Amino acid sequence: MSDYKKNSLSLTGAVSLGTGVMIGAGIFALLGQVAELSGNLLCNLKNKVQFSKTIVIVAILLDAIVLTGFIWTKAKVDLPLIIVAFGLMVVIFFGEKWFLKYKDKKA
Image (cartoon, rainbow, N blue to C red; front, side, top):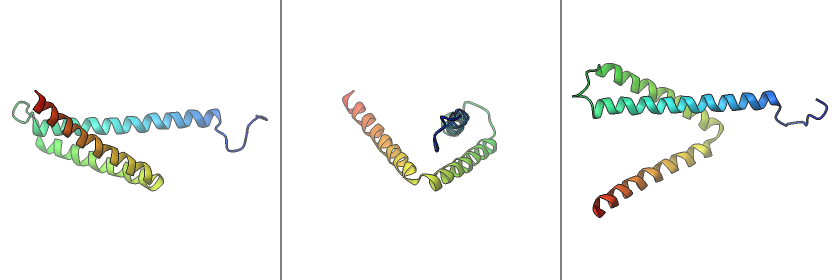
């Protein structure tokens, strides 16, 4: 440990950081899956699959609450990251709309 430099990342710190990043990414991925499945049930499969609308709506609300909490916490620490991520989401959204509109005209 005599070679340890001040403010450098130790093995324990690196493992902890990597584990935290994987868990955080997993949480966001699961929230996205819940939102996608819930929205798909309510919009596209409501006449094909039997389900309780109350449960799906509660799942969507809980998903929104948890996601808002994560975004709020991240915004307190790194607001520019949230702004850039939101901007990229807007660019991707309108880019996809433009692409699909152009693709339909071309076909």
